[in-house]
Length: 288
Image (tube, rainbow, N blue to C red; front, side, top):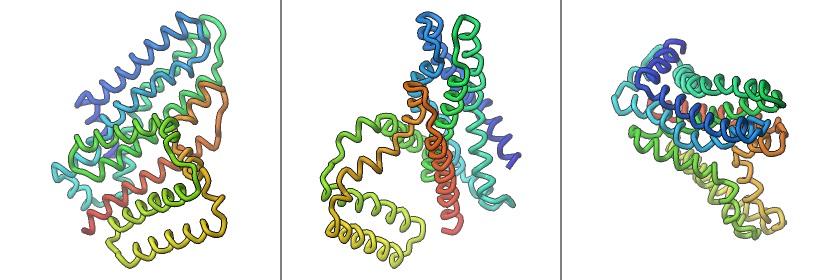
């Protein structure tokens, strides 16, 4: 894993992808920092970071698009699949390399609250927690992008797909307003969402019996629950999908100075889930 990590980190900075990402994120944040904290005198650096979230939407896909798609396009993934190293270590090596690229600007950001302190009142505890959560959010986005990169051999498709997913997550609160609230609509929507998981299960296993049985259980179970107590489904989609507004954990710090521990657990869980899915996606190719 260490060898893969070193190779990946070196490749990001030799190709200038890592340098461009770090430079642009630091420069973009520096502009906000100058405008809000130094010129306007706003004491919270966490507020400045919230303006930099938009950089992740473009920057993270730029980093993750080649992580596994390039290996597959160049056929060098066969070397990885036959290497005497577990797939988990290979994926983790690549993931930690990308996380290192994201960590570098966040380390630089640690200097900004000290600059505020030198010029007046500063809230170092909140600012440093916000930097940590900002980094964790970037790590979540990396895990999502790496999973998407594992599904295709085209870097362009990986970039566009990851960009679309991250943009949707960024606008998630607004999109929730278009969801239906009636019990019947939410029940049907839940069946559709669970059916997508069944479709993914079929793509991974190609087992019609297992997938058919799972789909039958979903349809029958949801229908039975609806007829027994339909009120359970009212606004259910908004309640369930509302938790996917990942940026809300970070903005909760910037807007209310509240640290949501459950949100940090959500970030760590999302990272673990997408790394696991990435390993399974590559594992499927190994045995297909």
